[in-house]
Length: 158
Image (cartoon, rainbow, N blue to C red; front, side, top):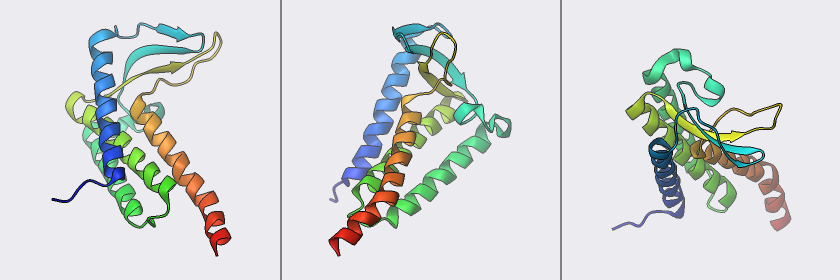
């Protein structure tokens, strides 16, 4: 029996953690009731029918599911073309895939994505997001980091 790669395991853990926290949010947070954790951070349960910042909500659930699955497929393709020594990029792709799958699960079963993290000040607040969105963002940063700084490492090794 073949064992899972550490990157597949990372993606699975990301999906599981995302879904577990969303279950807690759904069962313990009142809709649109802000729970301040820090002066700038709150829990705020809401639903997003689009993607980031509610973009593309006009294409509907099925369209967003297909778009998300196409993105996952493309990221899997890119991950497959990544060299084994590109650890940051590989971890980044795993986080992107895990986050995207977490949001696809929401959209498939609920028709929306469950968001709950709110950064705010008395005069400004950022869009509400979730852990899956954070995984996607951190993953993209890791891929970009590898792209910009990984080449320097290769040149130094030559």
